Amino acid sequence: MITSGPAVTNALTGLASCYGDSVPVLLLAGQVKTADIAADRLRSHGVQEVDQLGLAKRVTKMARRVDSRNHQAVFEEAIRALSTGRLGPVYLEFPLDEQAFAVRHPIASSTTHDSAHAVPQTLPELSQFKRPVVMLGNGLRRHRHELAPRLAELQRRMIPRLYTTSSMDLEPHDLPGNLGFPGPFATIHANRVLGECDLLVTLGARLDLATTAYRPREFGSQAWRVVVDIDPDEIMKLGPMDRTNFVMADGLTVLDTIIDQGIAGEDSWMRQCMDWRASSLMEEGARLDSDELTIRNVALMVSRYAEGMIVIPASSGLAIETFTRFFRPRSGTTFFNGSSLGSMGYGLSHAIGAALSGCGAQGVWAFEGDGGLWMNVQELATLRENVPIGTVLFIFSNGGYASILRSQRANFDYEFGADRQSGLYIPPWKAVAEAVGIPYRMIESPDALLDLLSEWTPDNPTAVVELRVPQSEDRGPVLTTRIIDGVPTTPPLRDLAWPGS
Image 1 (tube, rainbow, N blue to C red):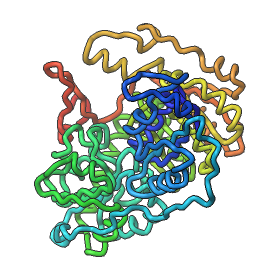
Image 2: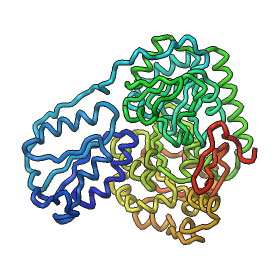
Image 3: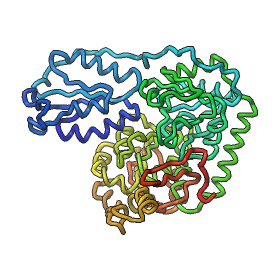
Image 4: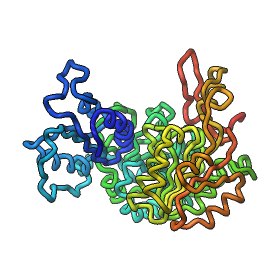
């Protein structure tokens, strides 16, 4: 609930993030009185007034102006929009002269998940495939509590599962058949399984450019593909693709359908996938194990103690990408970030929301880069005042904008505004935490972090913990985008390899 003008323009980043990540949020915004709202061609008329509706329409499922004549119908439409189809935010604005009406209770609600239950009879004959893979995207998050028996059935039928960076917490990492997430910054085994399967079923995974290395048509293209999404626009963006069935339906409905139709893999296929996984992780350990406080070590240690907790990485930056790459969800772990927009500094806001929602009964651990956090540092006051216990804000302290610095060095041979030497100043976090009144601790070794994690309980006071990590570290196999003839170009996923190999 916010006021008009700059409050709405400030909130647009949050709305856009929710819109891309399919998060249902109802935003109630004020507006100047009806007579002061600018006409179409006038830039501004009222005091602190802007075309809020026009701005909000592009990043919401529904954006409406509410008045005393339509308020009940609009509220009921808003609740339906929040709970049906592909989830997302709804924006309602209230002119100053239309804010005194009462809304009847209860507002009509809907418990249905979507309006696209029917699965077209265009699925291939599933028994012909011997090496199937099911990829579960963030669209299945609304069904998280219903997934466990279905995943157990897929495991029993020797069907490996792939995920995305937004959905990888839907199944514990160590379960047989969980191959993690593929992509340009992922494990070799996940991409190998993707490239060797003969059937790829994607459920609520929008096949975005970051996941597909900017080549969605080549993503698992050797297999027969069944692409399932509740959002018709996500299907339309892919266009016709060879050997591909597109199904507009809820992912859980299709998952039940393919299980009923007898999808199953051969024992040898599951064994091969698990062998690839074991070999890949063994090589990763041999190459990357370190006694230093690397981000990889932080991710692995946090994974060990995060059962039943909410873990929130910030949305962008080299440190957060590395943390996400090596994090291994345990049973009941919720791993959430605003991946679609990647707004710097939003991890702290996400952590405050998670803590206040009561969803993080076992506690909330949030991770921010030092550069990104400084863009949203005022929220430390909200953290201190409103979240007195049960939350830890970990700061990856690597001297600034490491990903920007890496890109500048790799592509332009020039550095500017990315670290202290190139013009960026970040004040000491100890002084900032003490000024706000939040307990502070510096961690510089794996042993010190292990002590903190093993002793921590949800009853501990909220704290800021600075993690002194290297400015850069080896992140394993990666596809490196290069500037070719002035155009950023990413190689295909089959070229994923260890640097130098």
